[in-house]
Length: 342
Image (cartoon, rainbow, N blue to C red; front, side, top):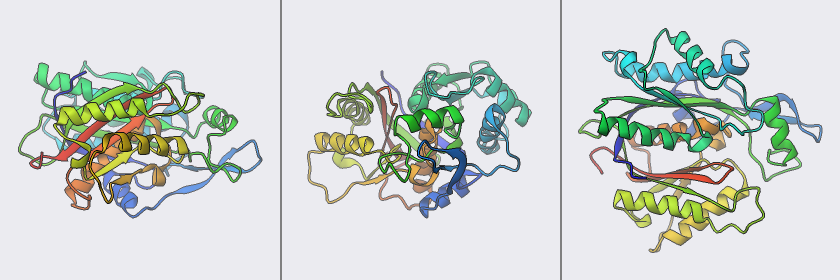
């Protein structure tokens, strides 16, 4: 599906390493983490390591997610103080419906609690997108349609998620997906909230999403099929085509890789199949090294990091490739560049 370019004008973040976008991105740049033993025990008897957001009170469940979401939303709203929130559509990305241990209330209850904490109401076209890590890409596609087809000046795309839930940890521990002393091929569970202020490309500062690609991978992480990275290769290829670029034009990659070998192999295979010219290096960033696996918040966090890296001039170059994938095979990729350099 075609997605006209949109600009990411600002961001808000609340992660295990920072309660604002500025603090989170600074910590990620310095490769800091907040990995600590949680209150959960793995099947082998050891404490599970995780990345928990240090809030002022030990909130749990939907109440905690609402607070992880409210902070980043406030950061975005503060960027456009003259725009009433009721004129801003909000696309809220949450865990996919079949995610193990998924909390009840990830629709209207979460949305309403976050709004109540902020004391605001958002545009009636706001919606919840329950598609996990790829949800941010789906939300940006819908935001682009509103911006171009209905002349909506600004949209907020947000994501919030937590893997630090008993049912979720139990399921992934049973599948040997968690990083433990007995399993080096696993991820560290985390939690985060992030929000992006999105608008039409212009002359101002910000990051432009030049092209997007969507695909499905048949050889999923828990399937028996041999991995060829067909899904990621197609989504990245479509994003490059839409952006009028090739793999050789990219300066670095940023992904949702959280520690499992499958993700590293998939990214390497897709790059090998698409890169036609010799490159000495093509950096790959994975913020999960610092904040853990954060599910539906992963892509908004990644784009927030990319935005800060461009604004503060520490990115390896202007043009970046971002890609994420769900366990069920859904893949999203996008090509990004600072406004003015695209």
